[in-house]
Amino acid sequence: TSALMQGKRGLVMGVANNRSIAWGIAKACRAAGAEVALTYQGDALKKRVEPLAADIGAHVVGHCDVTNVATLDSVFAEVDKLWGGLDFLVHAIAFSDKDQLTGRYVDTTEDNFSKTMLISCFSLTAIAQRAEKLMTDGGSILTLTYYGAEKVMPHYNVMGVAKAALEASVRYLAVDLGGNGIRVNAISSGPIKTLAASGIGDFRYILKWNELNAPLKRSVTIDEVADTGLFLLSDLGRSVTGEVLHADAGYHVIGMKSVDAPDI
Ligand code: NAD
Image (cartoon, rainbow, N blue to C red; front, side, top):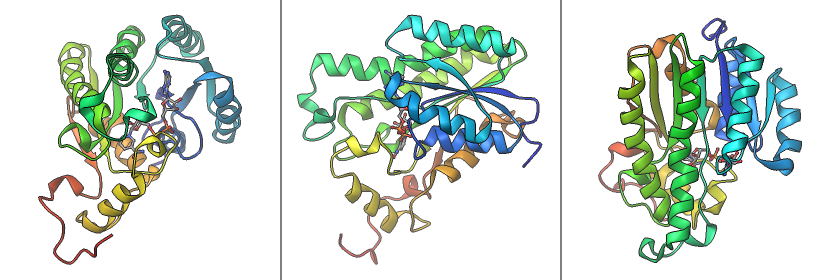
């Protein structure tokens, strides 16, 4: 796959550490020949992201908190200065208060509902608005979602509602940007133990359940999700837009627990 992404320049947002899905994607894109720029959220993550970027020869284009419009603008200004254009963009950003990723969805507060929707859903649109201006030669935008958008998963709560809106955003953005040759897709990843996932109640149980019941009888890795990402970000995926592609060891097709799955 070494020439797959040759000549492409991509901004990858959402690396927190070496377990981040965004990190898997950044690595895979670099290995396939792309130029990559990373952002980080705040000084604490800067210390983690800078050495990772150095490891793969990626650029770092600064701090971006999607709730702060000025930081979004400054990151895209940096990308413009660096490359004068953009070919792909990865949005791997989500947040909700940990105390509401447990218990009942019905107890979600208005404040956390708004915050979750802003960071986990609207931010894709905010980023697409800015990316569109730089993707003068077409492009590919990719976000990350989860099965909790489609079906009720324990503890996923308001994040499931935000992911459902995110998946709908993918379809609307695909139509709006399609005329400019810009594709917009999502990967629905199976559960992976990352920083964000550790905020979800009983996450280990969910992971185990997936391993026992997914058609492939295992969980997925960030490198596998990244390979699916390469397909969507590269010209291999040139006819695919508005799609939510499951990289989940097939979990989304099952209707019930395997008869031979042991109890957890
Ligand atoms: P992660 O914790 O490594 O990444 C989440 C990222 O979101 C972090 O880099 C964090 O800095 C960023 N972020 C949070 N709030 C932000 C803000 N206000 N501004 C800018 N950035 C902000 O975890 P991950 O699991 O790699 O998550 C990446 C994406 O994958 C998320 O959208 C997540 O919902 C999605 N996803 C994860 C799983 C899983 O099981 N890990 C499954 C399906 C989908």
